[in-house]
View 1: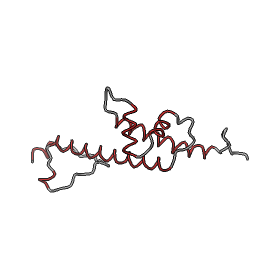
View 2 (view 1 turned 90 degrees about the vertical axis):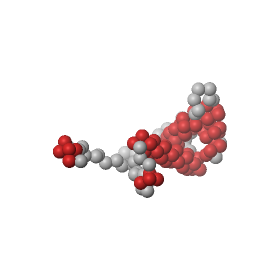
View 3 (view 1 turned 30 degrees about the horizontal axis):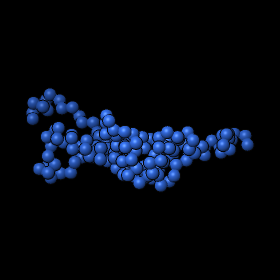
View 4 (view 1 turned 90 degrees about the horizontal axis):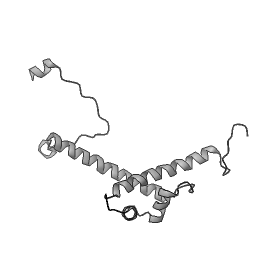
Length: 138
């Protein structure tokens, strides 16, 4: 038993970390999605939670537990974890697409005219600076 550390619940430390990792990820996704559903001043938290529950299929009571009672929870249900992960991924994709549309509009790029697909913004590369000699030639 030398070298093994057990928590108060009787599980070894690695088991506690694994469950808390899934629970903390689910809580983070739920918080981010709640922020996305919030409509501003005058909107109630309960209304945002209802809209999130309706969109993801997760019961409102479970979202409430994730928001306020994670200290009492030991783990998150697999179906809830998966639903939150999928909803968060969809929100991220929608955000990236909106950012790309905004960038294209700001730069005056019309992808329909150029007949090209928009460039992915996942990994951007540094663009070399144009020297004075190259700028004069152009």
